[in-house]
Length: 378
Image 1 (cartoon, rainbow, N blue to C red):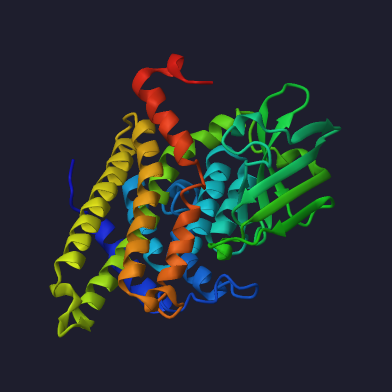
Image 2 (tube, rainbow, N blue to C red; image 1 turned 90 degrees about the vertical axis):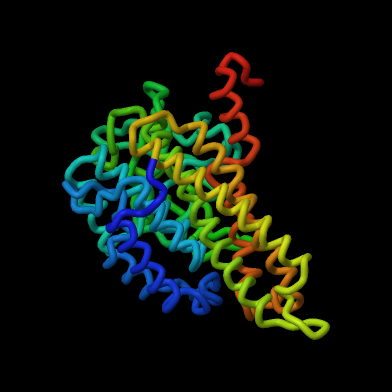
């Protein structure tokens, strides 16, 4: 295992860090407002290949390996966690369309990567979050098309999407299938959810009331649930990395603040209390980051990584939230204000302790991989 970045990874890191510093940090205070979506930044990231990073080169994307993609997400997290969440959700959707769909679906995936179409990934339902396989949204055959009925909740990109990759249970076979549903279709209603943070991600609900779609809306005859699950072991590590990116940015800002800020005649950095806090936070961040990249290295090498990804998913957002919280307190009332952006990062990372799998479910996965499925409590 190599701990350094290769030339391509350094290029992505340096390019994105410069872009984030110049165009995101300090500029994103209004992004969670109703009219605050940064279309210009989205267009820039599409031009940089960030929205097509999971599509293979064969199908017109960047085709980045899991580790290089992790470098991208870590740098995006330094800027805005909500925006990184939207980038990830759209990448998950376009990857599945390109990998499993028809040429029409691949065209839509490429249009998404180019910034011409927004996609959402809709699996979660009001009564089925952690137990995602128990979905109740139905897909009923109707001649050469389908009728979709149900409700999806806590969907990233629900309010920005032009097309929604929707998972539904086929009434004839009871199998779970993936369908590409236009948000402009009759019977589709998308509503935003007011949230504690990450509202720029377009988080909301997708309601399907007898929505008829053509036969080519079906992405694949393959098991749609298995298709979705194949992406999660990598996405959980990527989520951990962009939360840690936000924490790292906050920690570096706080270290500079402790050097510049004086109390009782000397810089705060000269006191043992803040020094010990910084030492602990540095250690926890480095440990979580290394575990995230180990999970992605295992994915790249074709090794089992479900357990590692679950470890990262419960641990990294928790460590990131703790780090940002402690840094906020070290800034005093300045940290609590909106002037520094720390309170926004705190709100944003809290949500990622839940999204894509709660800590409780991730610990069950770790236990399953450790003891075996026969010891699961359900």
